[in-house]
Each structure stands twice: as C-alpha cells, then as structure tokens.
Length: 468
Ligand SMILES: *Cc1c(COP(=O)(O)O)cnc(C)c1O
Image (cartoon, rainbow, N blue to C red; front, side, top):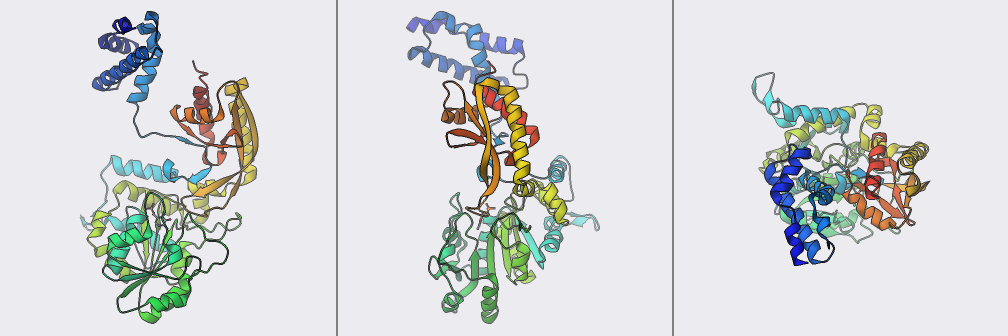
C-alpha cells in the first residue's frame, strides 16, 4: 500500500494538464493549486483506507475527470443560484422574494453607475436617500410619513428605542413570539431599552388588560403579528382600533409590527383574511412596520409608516444611521413599490404575488409540462407522476394555510433511494431543493419558472449520474 503513494501525479503535472485542457480559465492559479492539493489529499486518504488499490487508478488520465469536478466545484462562487421546487414562495433560507424585472434593472443601474442617492437634482445640493421612496410608500399605504431601514427587525428595534427606551411597552402575552433566526420580541425589547409589560393570557387578551397595565411609566401600546405561529380555539386578540381608542384616551402611541405586511388583498384565494397595511393605517395605528421581502415581494428592507410626529422622531434617532438602507435596496424597493401604484400590474409583475396567486388549473398544466420535460431527459431512469398537493406562502404569512397545487413526483429506478436522490441534488449544478412526500421526491411548479424546467432535468440527471 505505502508504495502506491509514489504513483500519485505531481501537483505541477496536474496544473499543466489543467492548463492545456483550458478547463479552468479565469480561476486564479493559487486557488487552483490549493484545490489540486486538496484533491491529492483525498487520494492519499483513499489509498490509506484501501479504496484505491492499484497503480493504474492513480494515473493522471484515470484521475482527471474526478479531479476537474473537484476543482470546478471548489472554484465556484460560494453564493449560488438554487432551484426552489419546495413550493414555499417566501422561503427565508432560499432568499425570500424574487425581484420583478424592473427592480432587477434598477439594482443593476444603481450599482453600475453614480446616482442621485443623496443629491438633490433641483438644487444641486445634498439630498436625502429617503426621498426616493417616502412619498411612494405614503401614497400606497395612506400613511402621513414613512421611513425605510435595513430590515423589519431593525424597524422593530429603532421604533421601540425611539418611543419607549427606559419606559414600558405594553404587549399581549400571546404575541411574545420568536420569528426564527433567534428574533424574539422580548429579547429585542430588552436590547431597545424598553421595559416589557406583558398583559393578558396566552390565548386571550382584552382591552381592559391593556388599560389595567397603563401607569405613569407607560410609553407605548404594542401589537405584534404572530407570524409563523397561530393560536386557535378559545382566543381573543385586541384589535388595532381598540388599541387606538385606548391610546387616544391615555395619550399613548400605538405601534403594530405587522411582520409580512401585505399591500394586496388576497381575497378569493381561500386564505384566511389578513389585514393589509392600508387597513391598519386607516384604523389610526400610529406606527406600523413590515418587511420588504416577504409578501410585498421586494428586497430585504424594513418599512416604517405612520404619523409624521413619530416617524420624524424615529428618523432623528442616531440608530437610524446604524440600520441605514443601502442604495441597491432603495433602487429595488422603489421599482417594486412603483408597480403597486396599479394593483393589477403588481399582481402580474411581482413574482411573489404571481406565485401566491397562481391557480391550481395553471399549476396542473405546468406540472404536466415539467413532467414531460423530465420524461424526455430522464426516460426509463425515473418513474414520474403528477398529483395534487399543497404549497405554502412562507415568511410567516398565512401560517398553516394551504395553497392547492400539483406536484411532479420523481422516484429513481434502480438502487438510488429517494432520500439519497434528495441529498445528491444539493450537489448538482444548479442545486435543486425539493421535498419528500409519500416516498417520492416532489417538485412544486409554483416556485419554478418555465425557463428552469431544463435546469431541473439537468440537476436530476447529474444526481443520477446519467452524464457520465
Ligand atoms: C419576519 C418578521 C420580523 C422580522 O422581519 P425581517 O424583515 O426578517 O427582519 C419581525 N416581526 C415579525 C412579526 C415578523 O414576521
């Protein structure tokens, strides 16, 4: 065994061969050298563990296909496109919302050229980066004033810090939620310096609970969307309007963290009704915050809207510089919001809305068409089917509510198990993420575009080793 080591090709001979084949043009030489060394280390391990047992397995010719795969995979950027076949539209782990075409263009232009980011083209003097979207947000939501920040978590933090630091914020026990990624309302409240005053019971909170908690040190009445968590059965939540009534009586601001914050009425989709931002604003809630990249379908951002008096206070908070929105986000957000000026256009152009609204009949046709593409590519190597299933909105919006869809089911022929297929698809190029249901790997066309069907076929084909 030990004498096999001397048959390993030298790093330089490998590098020369790679160069001759032109397989890795554009990849820095130092990176390629490190990757080749890494590959040769793998070979040494395989000699030690008896996987490689003969001299001819170590020739450059024999090793070359695997070697190029290894080096190519290592040279690829780490942050990559993936195919989302999960049917979860706002999938936080897969990047939440896809931007509309006009938003993608706006981002490209904003980062490839100088802009009037903080420059007033009327006066030729310093301008405000917030000017690009404030009026638009107000026009769409009906609010008096608006501010945009890095994300909704920042929006919650800066709002609490501005309005309630060192004093009490009253919140229902049923709304002290954890959103995921360790964002917990009580913890953010502590970090903001506000003192949490919880009221009510987990399942039921009444206006008199809030009223009974109000004292000289109360600064804020707060309501939180419970997001990915739902209390069912014997429940009672205090409405925004009821809180506004209390706020007016005691001269206290009311703040609602809406989480996903939809601007669209999804009535008719069979989803439980969720209040839109416009409705919450019209109830008179003083400050409302929500995410830009959940159901709104824009870039990661936090949008804060409400009464001018409070928004002005938040704008002046030094923390605002800490949670500042960047120019790419602003460009994408403005372009997305412009689509909302005409809700019909928003439904057509904003991918997140389009995916949520897609009808089962259309999904059935698309599932059949995806299945045909897979059949052409993969033939006898898989068993394919199309059947009814469910998709989810995701992002904490409409939790536990199903959207009817049609799934393409894939079961590999031969030795490969369905869980093994699922795992291997993560190493395909592009990687494909789907789910297993009833012993089949399932692809939901809701989160795939027609253009991606061939990529899906290619990914599965790689996972089945059909390319070799
Ligand atoms: C998602 C969510 C947040 C955090 O928003 P990000 O945009 O992810 O920072 C805060 N509050 C609620 C209720 C949420 O659903």
